[in-house]
Length: 417
Image 1 (cartoon, rainbow, N blue to C red):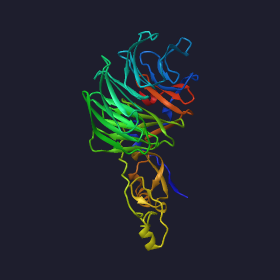
Image 2: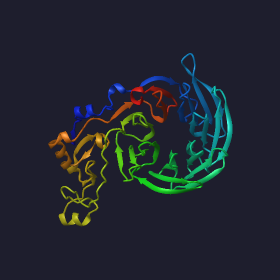
Image 3: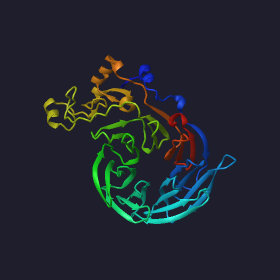
Image 4: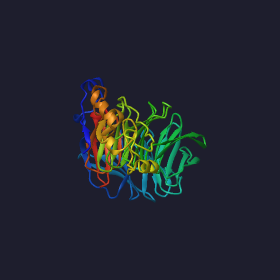
């Protein structure tokens, strides 16, 4: 049976890092909206009003406001020609952008009393369904990406198409850095493309490849130039874009596919949710160690037993080849017998037990003070398969939308404010 190194709280590290997450920080459920008429594909919380905007498979755009009774009721319900998939709302200008399954982006203006919706323009952007839409007020551009593998941007003042960039796979997620005019596009093959927008042209700057599943969501910290990607491979990866050294930090705390990410800029904390209803809050202000690259070898790098594809060594030693594993702490290629130990190691992003080799296990036992086991993430079971979520950092509220079409509003002030 695999040995497990138990979590060792580090009082010195916890006291030196004031942002340590504790069980007292857990979200509190404020209210629950009963199942919606159809699947909700995207939602956003309002800051100026106590309310939210949703778009759904039934082709509707709904604006919910809190009434005197304490219940949330729709003040606007408008139907569109096709299923509404994505949205982006700019509250200072009251401009709402909705991406449809037929490839069209609609722009609306919401009245000051949130009781009416005025259509401004339509932008025919894609040949197929839209995955994500983002509005940049600074650039006056509307970006969208979709199943036709294209990133497209329109002028938000005229609605004219400005340019496009064809990716290699179905685009699934999108984030922007308006100040530098960079777009980050996640695709179905698990890559994240860094694209520089140059007027009506675009230049591929880099392709970030580490995920083994399709990208589901992206989040961006423009202050520290950090990009976060959540994927179907159950992992969140933090990419240090500003450092220009190609560093990637793995966050391993989910057991099922990621569905969405949300970032708290002030507190430097990341929310990630998965399809099983697990919500993780990651302390991204803490010092973290880069995940080691996996090494390649034809034999175990500890006992030299050949792996099953090393036919010559198997014949020479008259042994059956073994399956290859990797130590998550040093990256060595090892056999199962040489990596039978499991441990959590939060500085490297391992909030769940992972395999480590015998050498790393001995190092951790011999010099335990050098390995800080203080948790750097808080796990919350929402008991709801999450489709999407929206975070209001100023009010400390989190909106989660479930696969069961139920909307839940949470108080996360202890985590966000």
